[in-house]
Amino acid sequence: MTTQRLTAVTLFLLTGICVPLAVSRAQKPDPASSRVVPSTWDEEALRSVALPLASTGAPPEHISRDYYYRMPVRPIYKSYPIYAPGREPAGYFDHLTQLEPAIAFDPATLKTEADWTAAGELAFDAPIAYDADPIALVKLSAVRNSTWYRRVGVPLTNDGVMPYARYVIRTKGTVEVGNLACGMCHTRVMADGSVICATGHILDTLAWILA
Image (cartoon, rainbow, N blue to C red; front, side):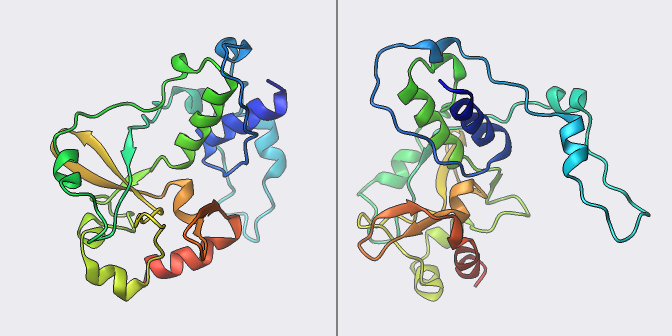
């Protein structure tokens, strides 16, 4: 893998930035299995991008490299589509309540170029908050309520999926709505019901979420 592609995957996993990844059809094991993710927290580089503030009373100070690499790695749990009321397969939600939590992202399993691409997609849809958190924008009570969809005008895919958030199971028997993934703001449903990653759709998405 080139340095450019490896950096793109790293950004997905560490910063949540939406970066287009090249799609590869290679399925045979390749050097991806032995790749080392490069260091990304460069204190000197961070200082070089900080702009001067109008007031110097509280100058910005980035955390240290040592602190950054001591932070726990956020697990990425397996997630599931959210269907609008009336479009959900029979027994779907009840089935989710019976599932065990499962970790979806494991670097040890990435053997091919296609594996790394799929890992980037997982990170793109990985939430950083859940509906019980104060910063969560979409609640479980909303996505289970047809009135919310009508009032907000939520665009749906051809399959009736609301693609801006996903169900996540971190504890068996508890289904949560994952919030604030990259995909929450960078996803757009087209007129034909297809879904694309659209970096220019952020304000429109937030407008209907907060409506």
